[in-house]
Image (cartoon, rainbow, N blue to C red; front, side, top):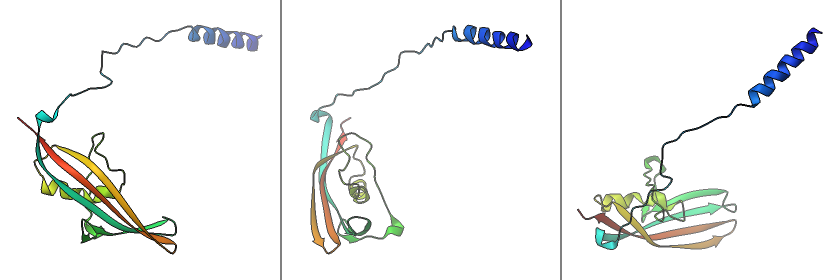
Length: 143
């Protein structure tokens, strides 16, 4: 009899607990913010070309970066730039390593536009030598 009462109490508790409702109040928030600008709002600073040369072995399993912007690459002193805007990201992730020179060349720039990217591949036995180039324009906001 005690077992039946315990089961009945658990069943009633479960039924009563499942009848509740949850309300959630949230203040109005934006999902997306849009800023409309034209070329009249920007002043052109110049353009630069960045490049990376790397070797790939065993079908891309091992990669070794050899030159960044025409200079020998030292992985101990790695500099990397990630541009956090849509449309300004490089298709090749290796070009992020070379993009630091853009900030050094145009420190007052607030907007970078990737004009084009090119790549060339020289195939070797079980490997390849890859060269990636990008031309980037720098702009700053007019005040």
